[in-house]
Each structure stands twice: as C-alpha cells, then as structure tokens.
Length: 198
Image (cartoon, rainbow, N blue to C red):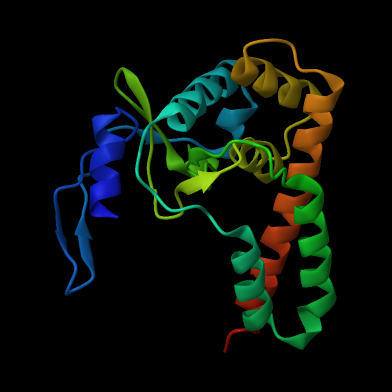
C-alpha cells in the first residue's frame, strides 16, 4: 500500500505518505491542508466537473495494483451477514453479472470516491483513502459518485459529459444506471454484514 500511495502522489493524485512499519501495521500519512467535501459539494455542477476531471486522471494513471474482485467482496459480505442475507447476495451477484463486460479494458480506480474522500486543497483537488484502489471498470467510480450521493438525472448527465468529454449517449446512461443499482446493492449487503456483527 505504501508503494501504491507513493505512486499516487507521484501522479499528483494524492498526498505523499511519510513512513510505513509493516510489522506494526502502521502507515503514517500527512495531514492534508484543505477541506473534505460533503455530499452537497458534489451537487454543484462545477465540483462534479472537477471530480470527473480528477477521476479521468486516476483512470489514466499507470500504477501497479491488483484488480478489485467485486465477486469476492460480495462473498465476503454474504458470509459476514449470515444466511438471512443469502437472497440479497444472490441479487447482488446477478446485478454484477449485468454490469461487467469481459471485453472492457480495466483502469486503475479509486473504488471509493465518496464526497469525504475528495479534499479541496489550495490550488488542487486530491483524493485520499486509497485502500480499496485497484483495477476495475471505470464505471464503478462514476457509480459511487452518482449512487452514493443520489445525484438527480441532470447532474448524472453532467458528470458523464465531463468525464467522457462528449454528450453521453443513451447507452452510456444505461450502463451507468446499471452500475449504480449494483453499487447500491453492494452497499446494502455491506450494511447487512455490519449489522450482523456482535
């Protein structure tokens, strides 16, 4: 993770880590002088455009990282949630199957670009908390931004246009909509797993 954070910093996407002690499980990162966004910030078109530009830079970055195994994440949450969530997990697997395209190129993704992980620092916008980063279809990052913050349809189209750099087609909107439904299902399953813990 330390090497990945160094690469992220070298690409100008996040702050440079200070030190790591793998034996102790410690990672020291600097305080970022800036303001973490809230959901309302992503409701503003200018900030959605900034987020889209930053995510394009993330997805273009040449950073060594493993793929994000969403199937394994579903299985892990299902185990933690217990048998009562079996139907929920199956629905989540079906949603993922509708989203993933085996022909789609994978990109380096943050995989958790919620509002609080965007930090507006003087002169720049950064992402923090890269522990879930890895290769994935870029749609997942856009689905997190859209689905987590319940963006209305005009804002979703604005996000897509800023990211794709052209007006989104009906197929683009449908693809993102499928990923948003999957993302919300995954979050719901994760919440079930949390609630099942003693």
